[in-house]
Length: 157
Image 1 (cartoon, rainbow, N blue to C red):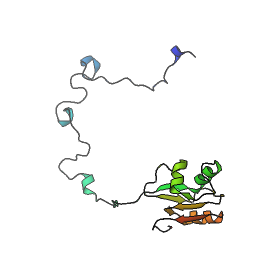
Image 2: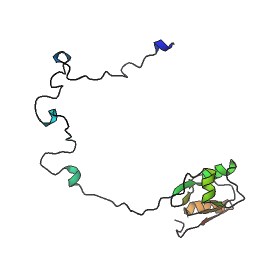
Image 3: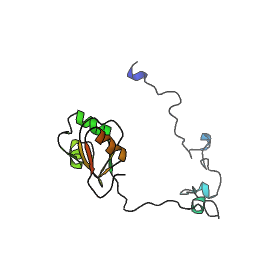
Image 4: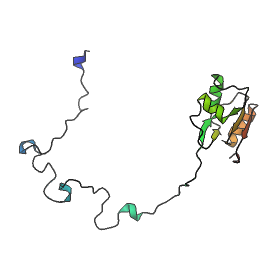
């Protein structure tokens, strides 16, 4: 195969529809829009318009609530922490704080804190100090012989 033999798959590209280019094209004069009426004019957006009645998006009730001061945590799985310990990016001898997780590159930014979840296996004996952890994550770290302390006022959920 040579460069000059390259072709797109048949049917992969369609030619652009050129409207308003004379009667011979089949899309001349009114360009396929019909005659008169709102939809034949330019600048029309009827997407959610339903005539005189109340549109469906206004008839249906609004549901739910978004807490304005909700905390967002950077989430870390135990399996990833173990991977970084094995790679030598985290020192298992030292206490592993949120700053250590950020400097190692495991967490991009702290947000309102770091929360540890129990996905993956933990074999290293670590002293983790984070602002949140699941119960199963705390159990998994203690089973491996380490300790996981939640530093802020938030209790382990």
